[in-house]
Image (cartoon, rainbow, N blue to C red):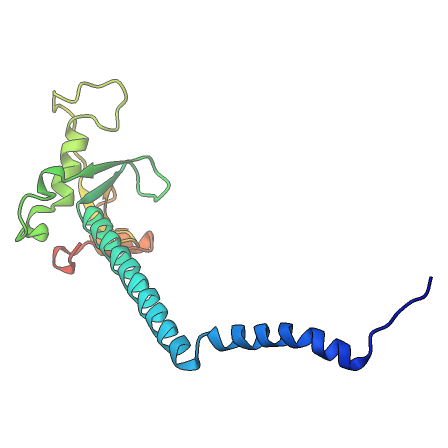
Length: 175
């Protein structure tokens, strides 16, 4: 059995058809102008989607901030690790677009009710306000939520909040 190798001319002739098909396929590939238009459209879509995602994120943050503004945390002792309870101003949420939160948010009044109804005394009936309310001082937590502490030492609010590393709650601060 002998091995027959084609000559260079025969190989050239056999591959001419393949070469023609490759050249035709290369011509049908997008031109640089078409590719630029595609990239431009793709980039516009990506930018639009990113813009929508950022807008949605901003809305979520704004809604959470509003919910925090309607929250007051009442502490049983003068410590951030003391037992606490949260009071929410549920009636104020969504009641009016022109709602003045500062006028309605009185953290000391909210926590006075908690103390008067025995909120820190287990097993009490919250419908009988018979408990003594200690002097209270309002501070602002780092996240903007109002925090109320009993002020049995009769310190000024500035001193009491300062010992906890907090600012004094200011109704004009937007909290």
